[in-house]
Length: 101
Image 1: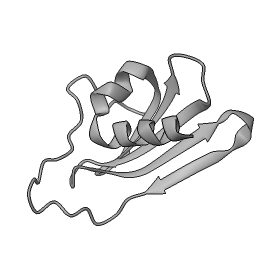
Image 2: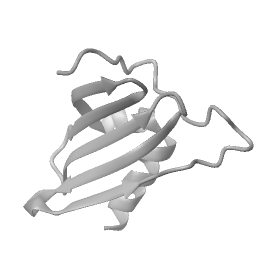
Image 3: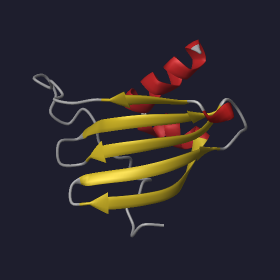
């Protein structure tokens, strides 16, 4: 499970590293909220990752990890404190938000 925690930290801090290990399977946008579903490129414990991003405030609102066997872990983030850096999170130029897949 420690490896899974490391993946969550990577999701939050390094979006590009996430895209190296996962494929975007669907996307949706409702005003400033973007939802992404990702599937792992290699088989492992995690079967799917769901991300909810606030593109106006530049932060990840929610991460849901689906595991083999049907278990799920959810992480909800709110009121980010960014006194030092207002653009701490930004979508990679490799990510294109399209109409829902």
